[in-house]
Length: 481
Image (cartoon, rainbow, N blue to C red; front, side, top):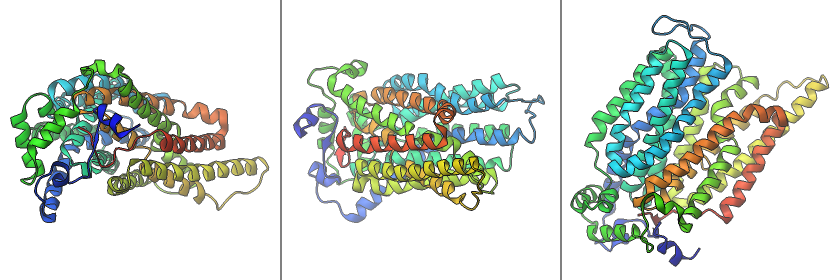
């Protein structure tokens, strides 16, 4: 696609990165730029506190699975008996809840704005966690998980859209990835707290955390300047841009660029623009990445890595092994945040997928040889470090690129006036793929054998490399409007 075509699509316009280079303002001293970036980083950390709750919610099933084996009593004194199917649903229902949540979130964030939407999320999130905390049977517990999924979908659309719009172009990738980092921090935190309290006590902690975020932190955050500009509130947008960009920034040029990037030649806007050829093409690119991400095992790793580590003969506590997996996921997120704005989204994707190809190929070969040895009655002891090492590489490399990047591009491919709506459609598809990959894990493993399943993940990763190199458009260093 030519540069002229990209600009006519009003999705993004290349710039070099710094305010003075983007807008022709006077030269900004390096010390001032560092100060400005640190101020933005502080805002990113505050904004992603909600994603910490998201991570807690995703990791929480590990805690209840461990607790009910020792004591299955509830807060109200009843006994909670969960079948294996119901335990699986405590994870899967969150993704089911995100499906309607994403579609509603696209409308809500466009209607109320990014900041108010983050405040509205508090209500369904508190309701969901309250159902969990006071659950006296499986139905009430699972209903709470479904409602929590709806809340998290609203949160994802609002937070990731906001991060892409308040950050400088030069650090936008790191800004969006900060949400993934905080999600991993929340997952680690909930397992650590789970060592000290019960599953329903943890639910109260999660309620307190989301209330603090939505009612104490968010009201003091500025609204997205790009949203204010597009909705005609230019005076407010100037004030926010001055706080975020500093005195060396050319406000009028920035506002003029934002208006231009959000004006389509065909005059279409809102949900109707999704049917336009250029927008549909970018949606299909993101859909493809979500499909590749899930069917090369990204979500399966998070949900089943602990079980695989334990069956491989790794003799450590289940809580410790869970923390190890999520620390590796966090490590991959942090490493990508450090390099993504330097080397680009496409290179991160290729690096991530190449590591997955290597790890899954070795893991599948190990599983095949081990199965053959067991059938022949041979001793296969002393090699259990192989699947352990491979799963750790998979956890790290999946979060290095193919895991978070589809979510990043779902935000960056589209301008402000349609960003929340189109992102909600893209992430709806992503959650659908996540649910499908998790539910198909056991049937595929039974049909293909563990070795065949791992090799199939490796094949999808190879397809992902080809797809990335030939189809994916890189947004690194480009202004997204």
